[in-house]
Length: 185
Image (cartoon, rainbow, N blue to C red; front, side, top):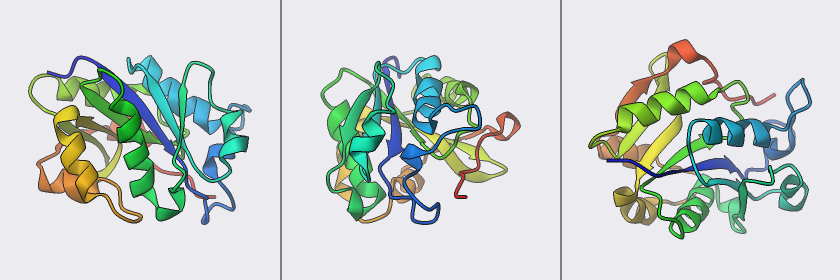
């Protein structure tokens, strides 16, 4: 049973399609996307919350909430696999049973999606993923029993998608909650 969940915000990319690192972006109300993503996980019950940085990490560090734990993926240029490996290393130092992972470029996502994925994972499920209109999305829950085998599969600009599909991830419909579309412009 998942009882202690650490949160992870993946925010290391250079935002090549967005004109710069998304870790440096702000919502119209002025709040940093990093803060919005980290607060959603924290509000849903995750502790600690890690924020994985890479491109322009020094500038992005100033935007990480004081209560969150920044992690710098020095090899971020390798792609999402580097960010996820950094998150798994950091989480390995905690007593967490699972990680709940989201992306920085989902500024409309609320804690409700995280809560729904966590609720669906209670019991025996150690892999769960939000879906929006049938498409896989975030947040994604990965139980500690999957951390080592997942780490072995991570390469290039691929995250956990293939691993999740191969290991029977539970899909959690979050369509009615909104906030599932990433922002690239």
